[in-house]
Image (cartoon, rainbow, N blue to C red):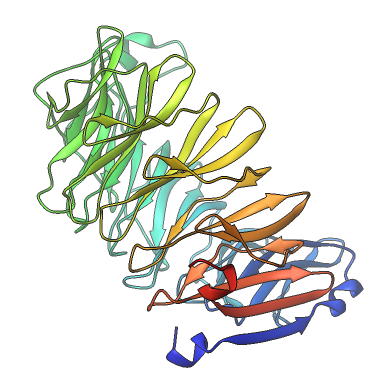
Length: 417
């Protein structure tokens, strides 16, 4: 956002004009907070998008999954003349399909990707350019961080519903920009790109009972009774993944165990941005969830789940959301914030790594909590908080009644920050 976008103050916008429509669907907020969009129904089979008081010129028989891109364009998946395609700020892609889904963005090169189906064949499209190869089955679609490449799990051999022998010979692989790996597997899951977007790793099943990780089609030397989603070190492209051995889970790096610890469950691991630290969600004992960082298990425990693990930008702090039966809590650096909530969303660190903000639900209203302190106001609809580049302010985007509010506030508003 521009420097002036971070001037402290409030802007508001009336939403009362939306009362003219029979129904509306899911408000969306631009990252800079200056635009608000929503799908509106103008009559039977007649849909459009309302943005900041104006309707798109185009009308469609259906619109869904409306989202703002990181660069603040409004993108939706639409049905136009019985064909499915992507609409960006009211402008249609030239390619048309039988179905589109799985909308993906990359801010680095302002890229938009989707999964597509045509004539019962599947592929991906990136910035309105479609794979040259289609497959009879494809899933788990991904876009590289730099927005230049797409990938998916694809079926490369046909087999009948009861053809278990052909299935066990390996009928699945990974396709990158439509070009499949030369190797095939019994199953493939969760492909991931490295930071540069020039390597892909995935979980693979080699037989009925053997699992491993493949990087660019080549498997680790060792196999396991199960594996979970891998991830790349952002500095050296080494790959880590949780692996199951003798009924317990451990962390493996390039096929070899990294930590001596074993767990009832271990997943959602990630590297810090500087590649120096690894954190993951784990269950050291049955029904007890927490975080493990560089092999050291936190003392904090939750009985229901832990989710939304996040590293700070400097790589030295970790936050996550934990649940105990019906209450949600934020845990950071192995310490739990004092208040509990009906729901919490993914934590957001400030750029200097000193502050943590989270969207919270309490008494059917939504507010922002920073460093454990609640904002004085609440909203009917609320977007995720965004910190200013200098980490001294926060952007709040929310709806109360029939008014949309864009507020830039100092962290001093929370007290103790």
